[in-house]
Amino acid sequence: MAKIVVIGGSFGGLTAAFELKRLLGKKADVTLISDIDKFIFIPSLPWIAMGWRKAEDITVSLKPILERKGIIFIHEAAKGVDADLSKVKTETKEIQYDYLIISTGPYLAFDEVPGLGPEKGHTECIFTLEQAERANKAWNKFLEDPGTVVTGSVQGVSCFGPPYEYAFEIDSELRRRKMRHKVPIVFVTSEPYIGHFGIGGLRNSRWIMENEFAKRDIKIIVNTAVEEIVPGEVRLKDGTKIPFKLSMFAPAMKGIPAVSHLGNPRGFIPVDGKYRYTKYKNIFVVGVAVAIAPPEQTPVPTGVPKTGYMTVKMAKTAAMTIVSDITGIAYPEENPIDVVCLMDMGNTAAIMKANPVLPPRQEATLKSGVIYKWMKTGFEKYFLWKIKHGLSGLP
Ligand SMILES: Cc1cc2nc3c(=O)[nH]c(=O)nc-3n(C[C@H](O)[C@H](O)[C@H](O)COP(=O)(O)OP(=O)(O)OC[C@H]3O[C@@H](n4cnc5c(N)ncnc54)[C@H](O)[C@@H]3O)c2cc1C
View 1 (cartoon, rainbow, N blue to C red):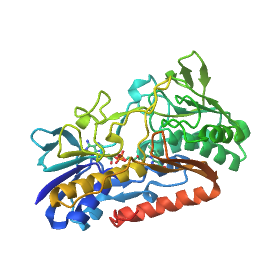
View 2: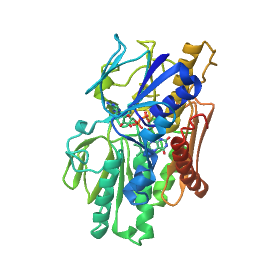
View 3: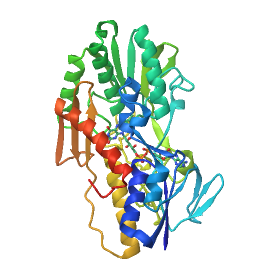
View 4: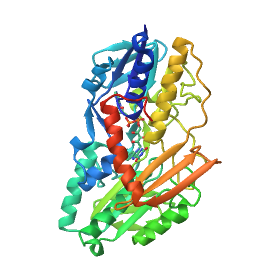
């Protein structure tokens, strides 16, 4: 029986574990290691920050859903991977594997900008459940005594969507509360232009997004690096100082320490077209942990986003490739990965499609409308239902 270990219990790790068990059944012993005991639907974290969702609305306990499918669950952090000996180390165990799938997501590099982040700095973040809950407390306090909001992405960011969503949601919620006239909103980004998203833009995304910001009276500052953040003030590299009452910034990402020795200088791990690690044939890497080179060098550094949709596709490809290795069933060639993403805009939303993700592309779309808001809400419910039932085979 093949011993397969998966590290990470989120979009990539769970999808891979469910797929491997579904396709291999008794031919594989599948173990999932996660440092947290729940699946969190990360795309809804901005809604936690706005008070539109509670933690229990978007989380699922891992143990029962994994055990029901016959997957062994180890609730511990992986401390390291010995690729030569095919072992994962945790605090209390050494786990031998025939195949390993790494889906450990990002280390959030707040330390790269002085004063950035909720723990040691002066800005909120919405990238983990704890951060989003803290951001919600900051938001409620802000509503009692409002002022300027500064939000956006610092240099080196790859996950650009959440600050866009946050800016639009704040605008929408303030209008609903008839408070928008009390709050100047400034959006600061390392992207060379609005709507670049780290992937070189999508057809007319620049024009559409600039228009959406203008309609909402949100000031934009692009192509910008942040020098430091001090209490109540963002200082840009060009010397501009922007005072704020509330600030939320996306940080740059790196690979997590336990696996970063396998990767490039930022700890992201290089893979081939089937997400097999280029240096060890029995290790696969999916999701945020994968190294993807940016399509172009931007004046201020930016990275390529690895979305949930992309991560699920990567996990399915990696799982199928392992199944093919073990059973000998041929696996069809994969096309370059595409992306579909729904971005919340408060009272409306936008759909983005790019095929492939990086240019030149066969197809690219960005459209906004209320229908996409309904689709986003529906997708949250659908995906959580799918995870609760371990139905990774569904689209
Ligand atoms: C605020 C926000 C909004 C987003 N919105 C969207 C969206 O609308 N649509 C979309 O497609 N994508 C969206 N994304 C991106 C999407 O969330 C990611 O692509 C996806 O979560 C990546 O999945 P992953 O499995 O690679 O990593 P993650 O989801 O980050 O999961 C990594 C898992 O590994 C665990 N882990 C980490 N270290 C260890 C360790 N040492 N040992 C064991 N376990 C460990 C973590 O606890 C975590 O459970 C959003 C991201 C953010 C931050």
